[in-house]
Length: 74
Image (cartoon, rainbow, N blue to C red):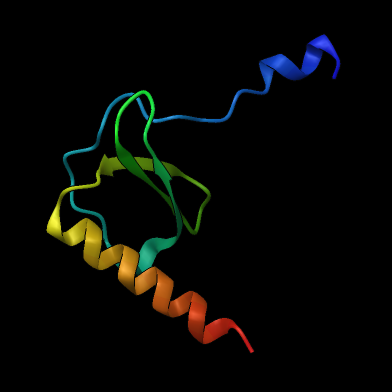
């Protein structure tokens, strides 16, 4: 590993968006534990938005994305 690879740190959630997102615009998500427990949703435009993992709509969105992913698998 070269020293240059250190600067490519993975995007992590530091602040959480209070807004409820439109599930139709979300294509995927990542779970995060550090520095805060959060779900990072990724939109069709590649925008990453961090939200609280505890909200009901977030759990519903995760389920929807998982179901969509499952439907795509052949």
